[in-house]
Image (cartoon, rainbow, N blue to C red; front, top):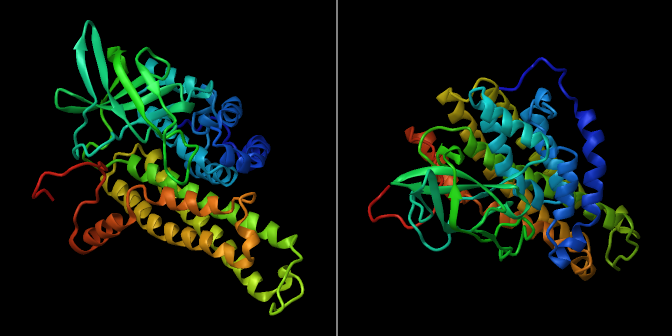
Length: 404
């Protein structure tokens, strides 16, 4: 767990470090979207500023930030470039796992690596139908270690990462494997074809006879049944992205309206910024951004308590999972409505490709389909009505007939 010996970092101190970087990242967002240019330079700037070490204790070279402070920064980063918090979300869970691990050389090594700029991506979900709860990607014995073979898709952040956390099958057991991104036999592709979140590096990763030493097999893999902090945490990163999208959408729309002089014969005012109907839209966008942000930070406060106590209390883990699921339903509806409504402030000129305001809706719509909300809503209702266990294990694929 994070040490309390050092003086806690303040939000003002974190803002002083990162706000100028966010401003630079935001300045190129539309151009990157148009050119589909992956944000390698922008990630490098975050590395240099130790963004990936926000939660790493000060004594290991990090900032020692709280969970709430981390998510506050993720929202601001998402407002600058919504692809980047999503690309980094598994990295932050990896750091949390190290914070929760027993003290020792391996834990210290990875915390210091994160403080030095090392980033971890993921390769968990597989292409095709597959099967729920099983992976085609496999570890097989070789010499004093293992060989990894398989193909993954939705490898979010892998092209920006130094290491890739891979979900694999080892003799029927699901395990996590940490692979060097540039290891022999690893091939990463930028072939994600979604209409939004195009720069998350969420494409295909192939592993062909990749040598794995024993200490890179990390034990039970992602999605193993049982209460865990990590599913709520991963979901909350997605919601922080949505909150950032809402924040940027409101700002972009407000700035566009403020400089606009073109109106209509039937407008209620000579200038759009004086039109009460336009003002109402801006007010609603502002409220959506505020509500999404407040919701994310409220769940982050719950996570802070759970992680500070070691993430072992099952009832507290259930509380966090439920809160993250409830937040998902509220934030998605709020942000999708806002990113649709913003177009009401103008005529045909607001859909200009040069503005790319549509990216806010496309990005919000794309990130909202992760862990489908309709399934989460049903799970919440079943839990509250019947006491059914919440689905901590998220897995996609073909289900055997008759399984629940």
